[in-house]
Amino acid sequence: MRKIVLIISLLTLSLCLFAQTHTRVFNEQIRTLRVERRVLLLENGAINGSDPENTLHISFDEMSHEVHFYTYTVQMLNCDLLNSEYLQGFTTKDITNYEHSLNTSRIYTHYWFNFPNEDMQLTKSGQYLLTIYEDGNPDNRVAEVEFCVMEPLVKIDARTRNNTDIELSGRYQQVDIDVNTTALNIRDPHEVRLVVAQNNRIDNAVSLLQPTYVEPDRLRYINNTALIFEGGNEYHHFDAFSRFYAGYGIDRVYYELGDYHVLLFPNEITKGQYIHEYDSDGRFVVNAERTGDPDTEAEYMWVHWTLPAEQPWFDGSLYIGGDLFGNELNLRNRMQYDAEAKCYWLTALVKQGGYDYQYWFVPKQPTANANAQTKTTTQRVDGSYWQTENQYVVYVYWRPFGARYDRLVAVQFVR
Image (cartoon, rainbow, N blue to C red; front, side):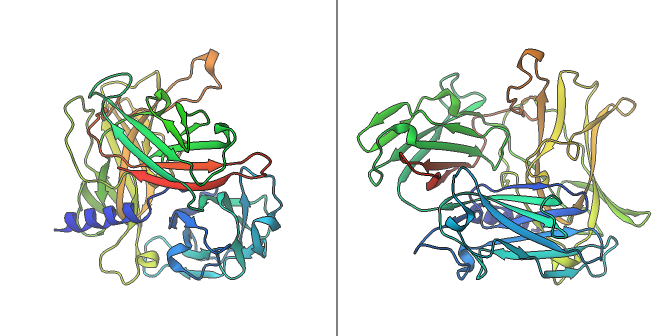
C-alpha cells in the first residue's frame, strides 16, 4: 500500500509540474532546491502573484541554523530589453520566510518564497532566469532557477512514434510536431524557434529553427532526425520516507555516527527486454512519516548507490541522473569505481522522500570534437526501448521581424 501511495503522489506531481524548469546550485550548503509550478501563464498584461495556481513556489534548505541574508533578482533571457520593460515593481527582493528544522539529526533552515508577487510582476512572455544570492552581493550566487512565461497564441499537435527514421521498434522514439501559426503574422519561418525536452533533461534538449515543411498557417517538423531521442528505460526509484525501516528500493536504513544512512539495493547492468514500471520521469517529492511538516522535520540521510561491474569503463563516465541532481553532470553525481568491490558507487546527502533516478553514461569526447555537445546514453546500463513512457515538452518561441525578445507562444507536452 505504501508503494502505491508513493507512486500516485509522484504521478500527480509529474502531471501538475508538466513543463521544464532548470535549477542549479552553486553552494554546497544549499540542498533540495524545489520549484512548484513550471510555466506561468501571461494574461491581462501582467502576472502579479494573486493566483496561487499561476505562481512559482520556490524553496530550499541551508544546512545550518544560522540565519542567512538571501536576495533574488530576475532577468529575461534571449532579449534586448531593459528590465523595466518586462518587470514591474522592484528589481530585487529579500527572502524573509524561513524556519529552522525541528528534531532532526542534521540541522538545517528551510527558506521559501513565491514569485511573482505584489513587489515584482512580469509583463512579457519568454524565458527567465531567477538568481538567488547572499549578503546583497550579486556575484555571490547560491542558486538559479530557469522558468518560462507563456502567452497562448498558437496550437501544437505533438506525437511520438516508434517507427523512427533510423530504425523500427528499437531503441528510439521520434517526435513529430505541427505548429498552427494562424494567429501569427509570420514573414519568415525562421522567426519561430522550437525547443523539445525529454523528462526535464537538458543534456539532450533540441532547439530547431528550420521546419521540415512550410504550409499556409502551419509549420511541420516531421521526419526530422534531430527529434529522435533514446527511449531509455523507466527510472529506478526508492522511497526513504522512514527512519525505522526500509521503504521501496531500499535494502536497509541504519544510524551511525550521528547520521542516518540509506543503503539501496544494488542495481544491475540490464541487457534484457523492456519491463514496464510506474515512475515520475525523474522527479522527486519530499515526504517523511510521523511528521507534521516534512519541509522542516524530514531528516537528511546519506544515500548509497552501488552498481556491480566486473571492470570500469575507460571510454567515459557514469552518472546518477534525475531531478535529484538537477539533471546536470558534475562531481556531485558522478560515480566512482571500486576495484576491490568491483562496483561503481555514489554517496549523496538526500532529504527524506521518494526519488527517481537513472544511470547516464557520458562517452569521452574525441580530441578533434572537444567542443561538440555529447549526449548521455542509458544504453550502457539500463538499455533503451521504444516502449518506455517519457514526457516530452514542446516550446514554441516567436521573434517577429524587428522585435527585441523571444515570445513564448505555446507549450505542449506529450507522453
